[in-house]
Length: 228
Picture 1 (cartoon, rainbow, N blue to C red):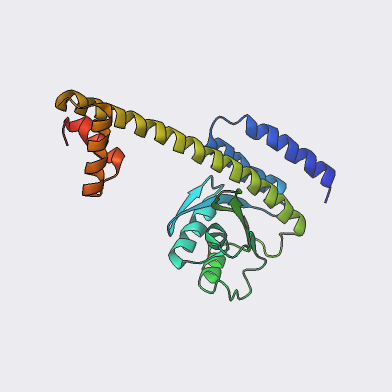
Picture 2: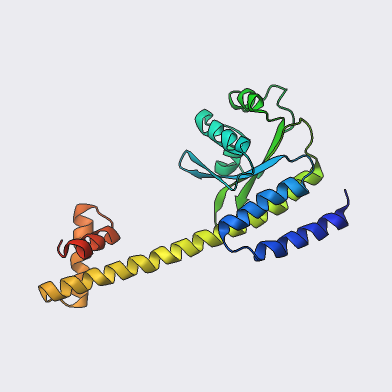
């Protein structure tokens, strides 16, 4: 492999990622780059788990979506395992779907029927959290090399950073929105019941605890109805 040329292409891609306007655009650029940089890679996508539900992000083709959905139905598969692993494994590879795969006995033959010849899955993670998996697919068996695995790791690192940043931003926006609605609800209670700020917050919190309803939901009800 021409490592110098590969490094130059990765550096160019990194600069290109910084120019993307949204997380979705960034992820699409990453999966697209996988088909360009990883020899033999025909399709790529990012699998995210919510419990046991699978979400496909930035797929380059329908095969990616079909494979993700198949792994969800079967409850097994290399990328499904990568996204939920607790074993410390960070990469999974199936070299040839023509061969029996004891680890994924239900998924493998069905994936082969979809047209998958070989595939790799990379865990997307940061020091704080595990986020999902980057999936690489080929219609041919035995095409993914050690060099391709290295390229996949680099792409997975970019995807993990993008997802982690997006999640942090979304959490910050949610926290700001929650604080705003709670403040609005407190203002309503202070005016209608002649309460202090501390008393109004205590009323919201007590109602939340006694009725097992999240505080932001209690606040939302007050802002919509004017009363608890």
